[in-house]
Length: 493
Image (cartoon, rainbow, N blue to C red; front, side, top):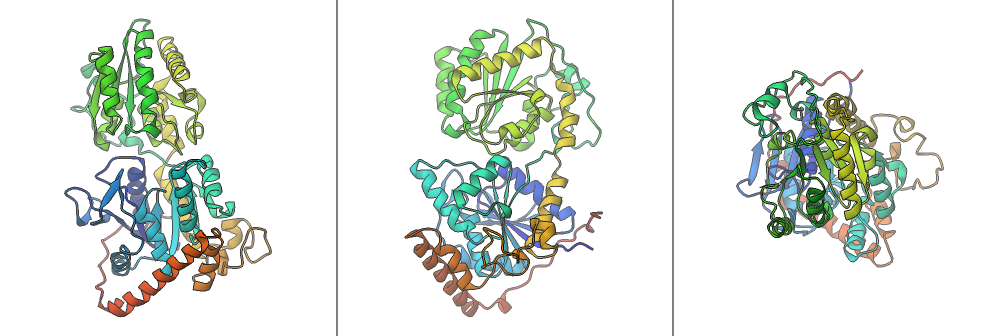
């Protein structure tokens, strides 16, 4: 019987905030629970949510009261998170700490403290960063610090893997690529009843996303003068291409009179979109919905024919998979890992430039009017390409590898005890990272002339804090939480 683990997912970004990382953590945790593992979430408190909460499927969430500084990321303190983190880990008898996202302070601090406590660690990167600007240089140095002592790294695309390996100076053998996925039952195309009753406008009253029945494909034939709706669902930030979108919308609407936009999302760039609408008098052709909940995404998407994704940087882009699953033709920028996500017949690519984005959108509109694209078939195709069950199975294999439950050759492709270039002597049995403090200091010392020494000081202080906490609040005084009744582990044969 395959082993089961007690896993803590640590990240600043989680529900009730909507987003790709939040959805990834929830879906992965749910599927891991279905496979027999225990999973808890550790995140910072949100408005109206502080303390311990149980989600409807039994997933336990710790909302830790920490100050948020920017884009839902908590204030980095390095050491103040340790006491409560240790308490949670001991209460839940955690064996593996899995951190998510480059900009999550809790994730990086959780990995540091977990290694000090002798726990296995995994990190998943969901983002791409540059190498030239000051912000990226600082973020990359901090990432190198966090990942110098992690057991394994997961990236959501091959482009993301290349970026992370370069940024953190990692051995490529310890980085796996496991993409995001989609819940196809939650992103079905329009049914015949919805298409007839709602005329492709609002399907929320008749939609039942919990149904397990396969959707009946609807062939939406378009004439040369039929209206086309373009949907945009995104956080309205610079890196999501909001400036590009603001410049392109008036030109697209001018070139294609029977076209309208629906924009969902919120952020600091929303004021620019509103000003553009006012200046060009487009109130009747551009609908701004503001922030929407994740369960409302499908109802917005099925109102459209094209999904426009003008992002300037993207490691994966789960939302374009959701759009294709809903039967939308996708127009997206050729950046980051986006070209890896969907096959060419579902997408029209553009350079991250205004002129090319306008031209690509025009090509997509022309293809739809000529009925060259069978968008009603996209749902079943996406359903066969992406599965959270498969993501959980592959992630479970990573856990097996770092815990030594599968052979070195099976996990890494070679014997870690052999003299292999790039494989350091600070690894122990099965090639996993050694917990010995001297070995940890050796890894951190190589992070830079000055940074290496600073990182070593941080690790030593963290270790001394751990020793103090073990004396001041012994683990025998910490109550053990009873486990939530869970399903039997599924067979993996």
